[in-house]
Length: 102
Image (cartoon, rainbow, N blue to C red):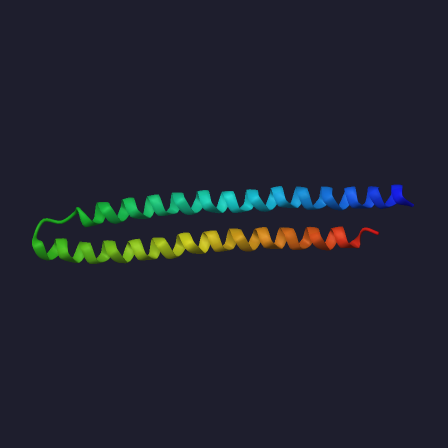
């Protein structure tokens, strides 16, 4: 009986450990994508801000660049949030599988 309990606990631990790896991988991928999105968005905003000849055009481009940076920040935050949600779902499903083992 104790041997069976040990096997069950080992199987549960294995399921949860694998899920933790997958969850961390999902978070890492989301973070990487978020950073890349931010880098590209800010590069576009910088290029836009530095473009333009007359003062009026430069002022308009500065406003557009600020808006682009804000949108980039929101998009990056959403990517991270979705990665966290995916990781949570992975762990929840693993817990369900582990609880089903008797």
